[in-house]
Amino acid sequence: MKRKMMLVLVVAALAIFSFCGTAFAAKTFLSIATGGTSGTYYPIGGAIAAAVSKGTDIQATAETGNASVANVNLVAKGDIEVAFTQNDVASWAFSGKQMFKTPLKNLRAVASLYPEHVQVITTKDSNVKTIADLKGKRVGVGAPGSGVEGDVRAIFQVAGLKYSDMRVDFLDFGATTSRFKDNQIDAGFVVAGYPTASVMDLATTKDITLLNFDKEFMDKLRKAHPFFVESKIPANTYRGITTDITTPAVMAILITRDDIPADVIYKFTKAMFDNIGDIHASHAKGKEIVLKTALDGLTLPLHPGAERYFKEKGMKVQ
Image 1: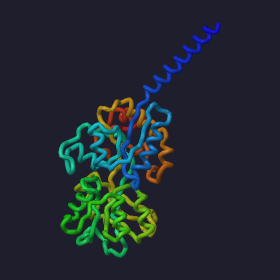
Image 2: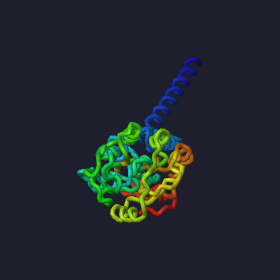
Image 3: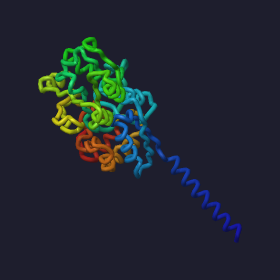
Image 4: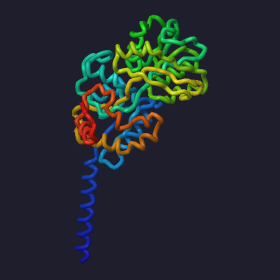
């Protein structure tokens, strides 16, 4: 009797071990490249990872990164599965333009997220009122070869400005705000969803403002570079800026690679939107991620897994 009972227990234990082993083997581990901790990609990426991991067999993890250009290269090379990037950077990568020497044709879109605003920070005593006033100033233009710098080059081309017209510094978000605190720059470009943590922090110690772009310039910019949209940063987003600021914006999008299985990206996309309330609660910009605009501004072919999900929701996929 004891031997029979022991056999039953052993068989049961083996069955449990086998089940757990199968469940473990079935888990899909997936990483999402975001940006630095001072930007918007990082907190929202963490919320998306948690949402995707909720009730699916995907274990998603958000990782800090160097944002758009670096993220595109990580995905294309197979070093990471999903990443945040700007729609303009994705377009340049796919076509092999700007900072990309060869086309990265294996990139695919997952979803459009929210506008990322070109925030041209300056101080109220700098006398920088228009983009032309940057001549002769000390200007932070983004990290070298970054999406920010790509946007700056596009804007300068329309404005008729050259780097030689000013003293430029190639700075990321954190370095840009640090240079302001040390009075080492007069203006700096940050491209991110508002409110941006580093800009909020700067506004507590410096009397800053943001450059407002007029309609004439915006029309020229959008004609030359259609990936830009005209948008606004609402009054009181940052301390001391009490009026709406009109500025160019690009779209933050999620991208992946064409060899990631369709079933994985389908589950990823579905879980993200099924748990969208968690993402909305993570950051003010997270509230702008909605199914209705998930196909807006995409500059890459849609991944078949994402396409399946959006079609199930009755959305028109081009």
